[in-house]
Every structure is written in C-alpha cells, then in structure tokens.
Amino acid sequence: MANPVFILNGPNLNLLGTRQPEIYGATTLADIEAACKKRAQALGLEIDFRQSNSEGELVDWLHEAGRAGAGVVLNAGGYTHTSVAVMDAISSIEVPVIEVHLSNIHAREDYRRRSYVGEVATGSICGFGALGYQLALEAMADVLAGG
Ligand code: CA2
Image 1 (cartoon, rainbow, N blue to C red):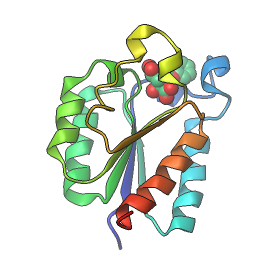
Image 2 (image 1 turned 135 degrees about the horizontal axis):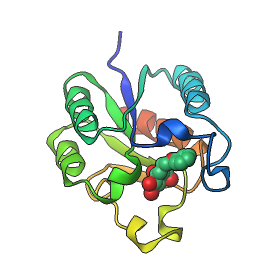
Image 3 (image 1 turned 180 degrees about the vertical axis):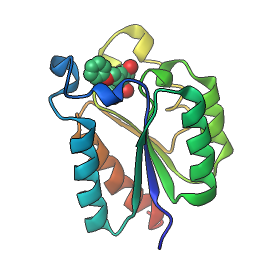
C-alpha cells in the first residue's frame, strides 16, 4: 500500500457545520472526510484524515507524516497564525505540505493575514470552503507526480 497523504485539521474544526455556518459553511468535518476519500480514490491516493485540538499532537503528526506519509494537506486552524512550533515541524519534514483554509484568511481580521504555515508550505489554498480540500488533493497529486 502506498504511503497516505495525511489530511490534518487543527483546533475547533471538529465544530464545523454546527456553529458559525455564515463563516465556515454547513458542511461537517465528516462530510469533508467523505468527499476527500472519494476524490483521493479517483486520484489514486490513499489518505489518513485526522483532527486535533492540541498543538503538540499536530506537531507529532507532522513528524509522522515526514516518516510515513506521501504529503500533508494541513488546515492548522487558529495555530496557523500563532504557531512557530507547527512552522518548525513543517520545515523539518521533506514531504510536500499544502495549506488549506475554508475561509479567505486575507479578507478577514488583520491577525489572520499572517500565516506561519504559508511561510513554509509548498502552496496555499483559501476561500473556497470545503472545495479547498479537493483542490489541495488535486494539487498534491500533481506535485507527487513531479508536476
Ligand atoms: O478558514 C479556515 O479554515 C480557518 O483555518 C478556520 C479557523 C480559523 O482560526 C482560521 O483563521 C481559518 C477556525 C476553525 C474554527 O472552526 C469553527 C467551526 C465552527 C464553529 C466554530 C469554529
């Protein structure tokens, strides 16, 4: 079996679809996981889809992805804008990391415009809601194919 693409989700994303639908939409994280599984299958990718509210766990999972993953699709949630530890973990691994956000972080509060993740990621996708995860998988397939 091929190494999976880790799809890692950070704090509060477990609440998707239950609160603030005007910002984050009505889609749940389980819906996003199901759509990712389907798209990954069509692209010939395996996925390992996870969510954690803990910064340290996300760091551990990034290390794990560096050892046993093909790449990472990362929505680090609020840690995007605060975590040098997540940024350092991304820098420490050699597999591609694609940043994804549901909302357009550049069109919101000033403090969301800075992304520590984006500074070291292979590329970033934001503002397309749940579709962003599908776009990130498309991009990952291309990058892994040498594109
Ligand atoms: O737009 C994104 O995907 C974000 O990563 C979402 C984070 C936010 O801190 C980032 O700036 C942008 C927040 C995720 C919180 O999700 C919730 C969902 C429902 C209810 C409350 C929070």
